[in-house]
Length: 249
Image 1: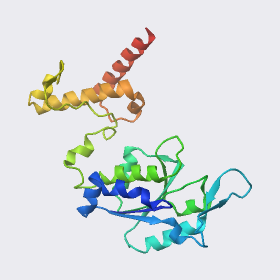
Image 2: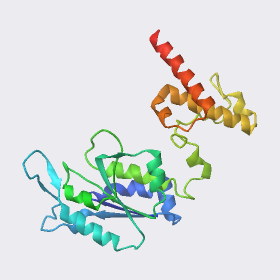
Image 3: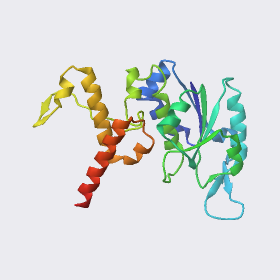
Image 4: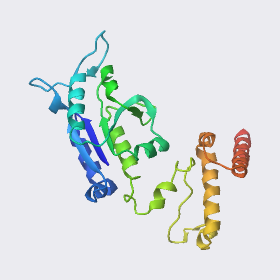
């Protein structure tokens, strides 16, 4: 996969993209990161990328010309089909199914905004508009890093174990089950016996049950779309009823 990121602060991306699993993935040739300075496509002595909003109002708006020029030139650098993503608070919320979908793309081009927002004509270049949450940041750099990290870690060969990406929070539509490591007993707190049993079927069943239990306690809204069988859905319902009774006391 190739990921192109267009920002007026390209220097912010270096430590994130070169470190940890993302850096390893690029060195393995699994992914290519290309971070571009939007100002390279701006005009004038000051390479201006923003201007005042027509109709008045606070804040500056990102100009369309640099994005259009950058997009055309960057697309021409690689003939693989590209999905262009505009990071924007108004976009669809980044959830695991969307991450999984984007991880199947051969190429992503990510627009990073600043200031009051984009000239609306820039949106015509985007295939998707994506938000990482219902809050406002100073710019789209952090959201672009979140998206890049979430997608890259799903590419084959990036994680140390192929099952890691399918057994974590949200991949089942549930929160992840509890994890434990050595020592088996620490300050009076013991690892559940089932995890020491070596019985993989019992362990899998325990993990599934605990994932449902943790989801009921922390994110019950996920049950609306979680893939549960009838027995599991009844178990979830009973957990939620118990929690409600406890809250009512």
